[in-house]
Image 1: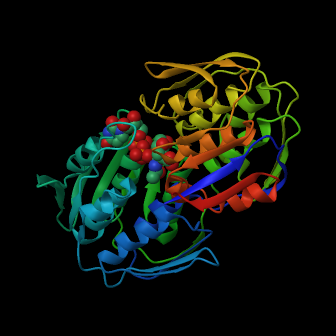
Image 2: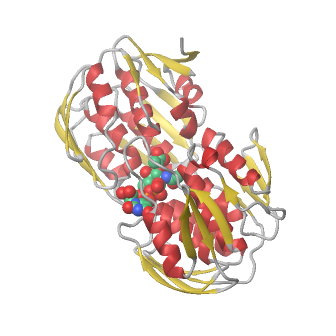
Length: 422
Ligand code: EPU
């Protein structure tokens, strides 16, 4: 296991290229299994979750070739014959549950392990299953596995997601595009990852109406062909680096290869802190203010403030002059980073799904660790502004979701080293 040793207190200055999006790539990888021929996906990040999902789709018989030096993934689904995703792989990554929709959608049968818990509490998949049942897919549970069966063509119907869910929307799309005569997903997720998946499926030959809205109507087609596309840039990585550029007086970061339209209301929120955010095509320049103003946020579904950036925002707010609150309405328990930040000197208090922050507090280096991806990156952000040296342990979480994090930060002046944990 590796850890980061970070010596804080340097302003960050320079340019960081934004990588391809993990959460956008995973649905495309699953969708490639619906095709009759090979798909090529470019701009796929070199991340542990991508390698894990490659193994999941290899297990079912697909041929996968990831040229990671070129970030290009080739998936040939023509030999898929083992319609099962085992617990060993699904427990490593919840998105493996997309195999349920992809396999039953194409082959009429799937056996996929239930994903189990998650570091910040229960993350149910009930909507994935109820939506498939509403479509006419037969769902049963057996020894921790979900078994899905469907006739060649099923009637479909409609299903309302309450709450709106990215994963359930993805799974229902994958299950329906070849199977359901007509299926309507109500209150569907509108997140860019879902829009990219819909566009990918349509390019393969699917019939989907209402893309980008919360009502998706799918009418089955008989077959889908493999295609070549470039995956979207990672809007959460981008938001994380925008926060990194805003947190410390003197910092100025230029972020390239971005899709600013996918940031929703995030740039406006960041400007309210006094940060200068200048968007020019696919490049964003962020300049830290001398005095950061406190700004409260509440996470919401897209285009609201993303839950995947709330930990980073709360970390930044420890450096703002005054009081602020961060409320997560998507995941109520996603605050595992708070006690660690308190150990570094932050003044924060969690009540229900809100953390109250009093700033500005100086942070002082210490050993910290976390149990999930976004919490871990927040500890890195805190360590970058802390006095003295910090150790961020268990950084394998970061390797799941941030491509070349230490190289990118070192290039803009951070003092960060990866070493083996003792
Ligand atoms: N929900 C249910 N039942 C379900 C599914 C979801 O009640 O069957 C609830 C969840 O408990 C949550 C809400 O619906 O309260 C939204 O969850 P959603 O299904 O949208 O989340 P997800 O698809 O499991 C994806 C991302 C997460 C991101 C969320 C929200 C991937 C692989 N994961 O998860 O990303 O936080 O959407 O935007 O795309 C991350 O990257 O760090 C990460 C956790």
